[in-house]
Amino acid sequence: MIILDYKDTRPLYEQVVDKLQKLIINGILEPDSRMPSVRSLAMELSINPNTIQKAYAELERTGFLYTIKGRGNFVTYNEELCLLKKQEYLEKIRKILQEAEEIGVSRAEMLEELKEGESGND
Amino acid sequence: MIILDYKDTRPLYEQVVDKLQKLIINGILEPDSRMPSVRSLAMELSINPNTIQKAYAELERTGFLYTIKGRGNFVTYNEELCLLKKQEYLEKIRKILQEAEEIGVSRAEMLEELKEGESGND
DNA sequence: ATTGGTGTACTAACATACACAGTACACATA
DNA sequence: TATGTGTACTGTGTATGTTAGTACACCAAT
Image (cartoon, rainbow over all chains, first blue to last red; front, side):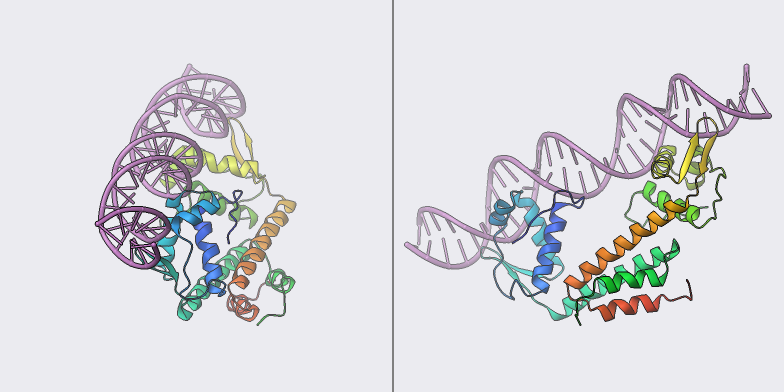
């Protein structure tokens, strides 16, 4: 379900959050479906249950999961949430473009990056 | 010369590195000109000299400064270095665009960010 | 009611990173 | 010699991330 990258400098729980978020947003984890239990996912990833717990708590806080005590964690697919998430990314992009411009990267060069990654999407 | 942002979550020395880098790349700090001493810049920013030392060491490691013991730190303007830095940023941009695409942000939306920041540059 | 799986809360320990404080020393220059 | 420079080092404190272990409340199946 998830592969952790130990070369990544970010904390493990953050990686878990990001990857699960992506799976939820893309509908791979379907709305109202049950997530693996804290203990089982921890086992699967060979990390501590506390770390998964932290990730789940964060996902619940941000609205991607809801919890029923004694039963498990479940997926909350939320259209508005996805839009919000998109906005966050657009904001990030705006920021990095701004940074790049300040050290003299031209708009044309940036545009190249956009075109390179093209994949006939909409 | 520099203003620190204490709301920024990044470490202070990293902020110092980034801002000085920018000043060097943009030629505001001229090649071979002398940087403020570790102690004086620390005083100016009201932070510990060790923190400035760490920033200077990093800038020397990456080639933006050179040091003469007993005399001070001096600016190394290097054309190739700037290109390298630009490449780093383009790589960052590529990565974030990739991330955004994975959660369903369209190329068109990304393009908007590019246009918004337009400023008649080259 | 008991059992087993669930989420949750808590403490303790450890490692790392960041920042500060203070000291010391070698070097260059006036 | 005196001053200002970079550099190195030892502490200290704080915050964060991760693991370990324990405990408890809840739910469902038996």
